[in-house]
Length: 115
Image 1: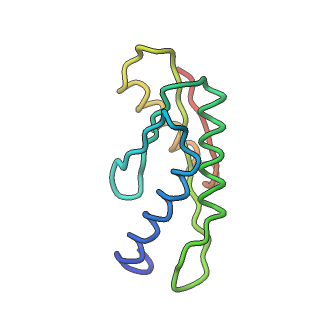
Image 2 (image 1 turned 90 degrees about the vertical axis):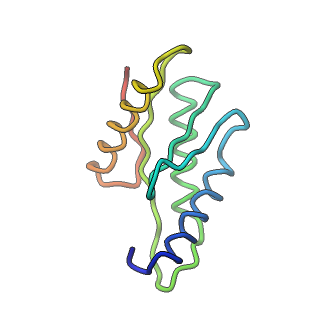
């Protein structure tokens, strides 16, 4: 927002590039809207999901974004996990709750919510 839509679009593209390098082959990345994304991992467990989110957080924080003024871009992640067959709305709601927890914990972190 500080530098306009074109720069904002470049930042979003940079975030996607940084995150994609950490995404397992069975994972899916989607943009929910604005600057919010969701990642669906179909393999692994809670620890795996948390570790992937942490790798993505670090990749964004360490990515060299081309901005008109020096500024570090960071991201917060909310993680939820459940056994196969769970309702997507439940998982999404838990992850969203964890994301708000991360934002209120100082940002640039990964938090999780248990089912």
